[in-house]
Image 1 (cartoon, rainbow, N blue to C red):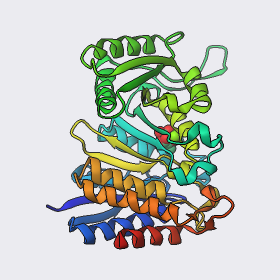
Image 2 (image 1 turned 180 degrees about the horizontal axis):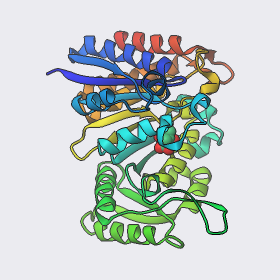
Image 3 (image 1 turned 90 degrees about the vertical axis):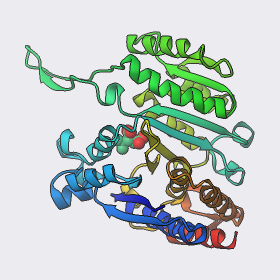
Length: 360
Ligand code: IPM
Ligand code: MG
């Protein structure tokens, strides 16, 4: 069966890291006879430059028609001055909401080879394996009303709305409880129920749902404490579930525990398991075009795509193993490079993963 994959390179380092992931996909395609059919389309700033908007209709249609999407990153200083409604980020957010990709999985796993690259002591992070489940199509990112208005006294006021409907909480809860069930059986729901009503409801629903998952131990934590605990004793967590904005913040913090945000892949899934896969990091315009970007988060995102949406688990395993082999060889992009390693550029890293795959 043909797997139709849409690749959206995006901006900044996006094209560089996606090119390496595409090489790796090609290698597993040949090795495992996957029959991948890859097409490309524009999103973000590059789409603004070419078409005037961050999410052209052709891209949205292709995204709806394909089986899975691999995305690089969007945004950059070139487009920072634009109105919020047509910024590159709107392309990404538009894909997430139009395709109803509400379930965002962000696994923070420390490769043992990178224990020294973390800013935390090796004993604090060694063996780290956390899954952050972030709600991705609701909360304050999408709540209405929003905008900047002028008050009666002439002063401007910015405002956003933090809302979650019960059904939205339940469907992300289900993703999280089931993920916890398949892993270590512990789920920590993160909220701000001491201040925000919307998260009081969130907590209530999670408690209600836990009756259906007697094999999962549910706990609750306020987001400020969760941020602290992530850098104090991150191994206490198995699965964390939280709303869109808290998840955005906590997943960046969790990424750094693993040595570099350049290592963190993600999956954004709809109810049927169709997904968009992207690294958790951004477009890093400061290093774009210099061969310094770490392609591993994108390569690992491609592995997640094969596992979760395309049901090609063996190919996914092979990619993850190849990444581990390359790290064993001591090859490192600058973001994860320590004494005794061999610093390599983006392309060399991608090529090394491909050859580890073909020799594995
Ligand atoms: C992420 C990013 C995005 C987000 C930005 C680029 C809109 O930070 O995927 O975490 O805030 O969701
Ligand atoms: Mg983010």
